[in-house]
Length: 424
Image (cartoon, rainbow, N blue to C red; front, side):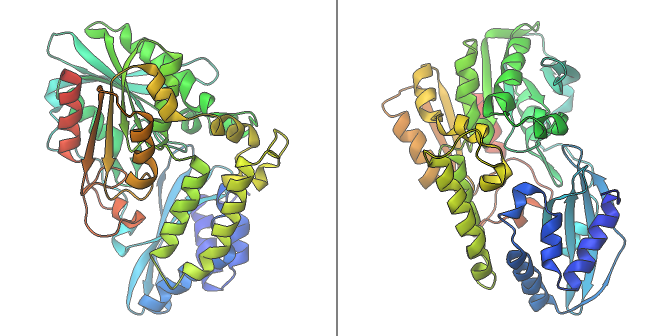
């Protein structure tokens, strides 16, 4: 496909208005096809029009760079009773990596990130670095406190997918908040573009890619780099992982004995394939009008998750039969990994941070596993943020993806708690 991302996005809008949802489904990236069936796409579209009335017009698309070489396109859509924004993420290959019907305000391009109040840009300097072996080296940023002293260091491990070093999510940058917040508390912080973001084609073309390839190689390199920098205490270099980065953090620490301890921000402990089923089921429940249409997708993902657990799974199992279209070697590697068990074996201090309103990593399904696996450990600290969601933004009511759209920052209590724990 040679069309521009803007042309692809406008075509999606035309197809939706014509009711051709099977054609939209054909444009989806493989990892979305099982989740977003044609019926799910139709139900979401029709539910929006039920609220707002028929489409009257649309504005010109506005695009901006996304992660992993993708492009985010925003199209304002006007209806008889208001409007909404069609958000489309188009990959470099012209496939749809994401489709969302967002609020009308989302049509405005993301404003430049603004520092949170708890960050003091005068307290630290930043420098860009390159880490990891060629040809899969990645770029990163080191935030180093200016005050002359020996300080602890933290390596940040981002969540699943092609995440950049800031963990950019729309208008928000979770890891930039964390890095600037901790650097203002005299902590050196190193954040990296994930290999899935820096080298998407190489990852896509490697059928043997595993969680170790996704995190361990560059995580170990980052810990060693940080431990050799002047002014950083080599005996106090920690790993901070968010979401799947938290899942992987114990595995990185097992590969690098120099890691002093772990900070897990919404670290997943439930098997990833079952967590995905649970999340899709929860999202379907948010809109009773579209829930029935989502059931075939839930059933399909359940079958895929069962195959991951099955003795029939082998390296030759077709990726199309597996969650998100990810090849079998990734799942064979992941299903043998128990993060809480590995974390317990490390014998290192751990800080676990959990949002009570997080539907992606939950108290019942994930924190409970960490608590069981790390029971009777005196060096494990757990903090729960009652208003916090998966990104540790504060909110109220049932959580949903829509609450990630407005510009906001990580809860200042999270930064204070991490800095305090590191100073003990």
